[in-house]
Length: 344
Image (tube, rainbow, N blue to C red; front, top):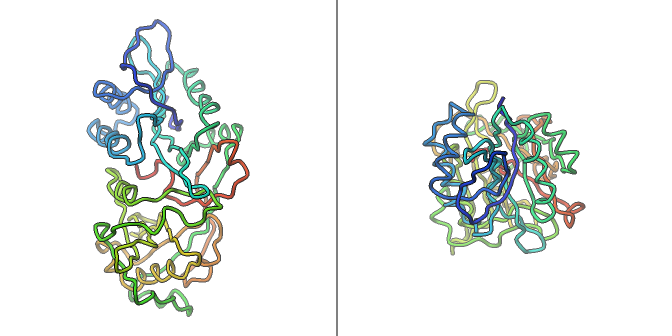
């Protein structure tokens, strides 16, 4: 039995050893030996993911992650006589609220050995204490786990509007609406090395949203498991004010591009729409030919996206669940697809 759901936990500083007749759940304590044991254990649960790729993912999640600190929460591990029998991992993340960073994490890679089902429940319930201080994101839970998350008080963001846009010469089929023009003092880029700084790390100080930094953008783009292509808008000084991340995928067997994150520091969406329009009209902004269809999802039915040209729009389901600290239970939240461990 492979329990493919996710719990975000935390790290301690002691050595990764425990000799006990009874299984015990402890904070994951990172190190070379710990990682090797963990990679082997997770490979047993997901045989199609080689040990080498697990090592690469750990490096990306924890060593290269610009928001990780010595106090970051990396996961819980269950041990029996020094052997790993369960893991519930976490990828450190930051969110923005009222101009300040908020600690959080992406739940990932929950596996428990089939002989210890009780351990799975205990590891999952450990979130009750953690969520008092940390914002925990679940983006890939199984149906039965979704129910358990709701019982823990998770906020479910499961309905999106997906906007389908044709690219290049086919863009004429998107409708009669015209795209806004980009201010002549700005330019569109597709190379993060041309960005020197961000205008600011959030758009709206009165909502909870991802904290954005130049380092976090580079980190997200460097994922070892999925390609994330950047297209952005900068001024003459290289200050980034709007961007999108786009990833290749297949829809109904057809090659397509998905916009997994949109961001702008502008109060209005004019610049962001001009950027999206530039991508639809010039597929050369994408790194290679991967079909002539682009999709953009929004969780809030943003008026700007509903006003832009599109082939069609339809409601779709996703699996984003947020365990929020008490202080944020009633705070407005802005959600994007690029939250959680998907693509990580």
